[in-house]
Image (cartoon, rainbow, N blue to C red; front, top):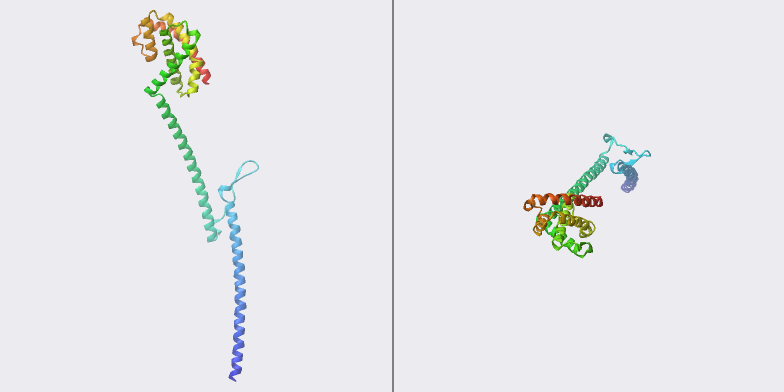
Length: 257
């Protein structure tokens, strides 16, 4: 009798375990299917959310910017809301980056402007400008001495012509706030200043009546101080170099333009 009950209990237990196994397998399959469905839905939502990002706005056929559709946040699941928040943060960071990049470009332009201004001021510093004018006068004088057309002028007159040319060079770069390269400086010295120097030389022959007055004229062109010039000499000089200055300035300004 006891043996018979043991057999029945064993059979019953086997059936129960089999039923539990089958039931557990069915529950697992259902949960796995639901998980797969949730994953696919979340993936689709992710793609849709990326498509709503401002960073990938599209342009319509008429050239009008088209904004992507938005979502009703109240209908989103917690996970979907997290994705939405992350994409929104990404768009905000992109906007901030554009603003910062624009600010950087403005600052770089301002720095360049200040650098150019500093270099320009240094260029026109008294001592540096004085050294440059000495160099211009020296080069122009060498050019005139080599020119056969200058043979009719005395050494002092060539001194005056060279100093006058350097003074006009100063007027040119100061008037236009220019920093000339060595090549450009040489072009001004060789192409424009000689004609002006010859014009001044012809005028000095008329204005100056003695070696003393010639020396005063040379000093005047180097210092631009007219206090040492007699009034009559200053008036005569002004009348003869006015046309010379007008001509060379017109040519220089026309070449610059």
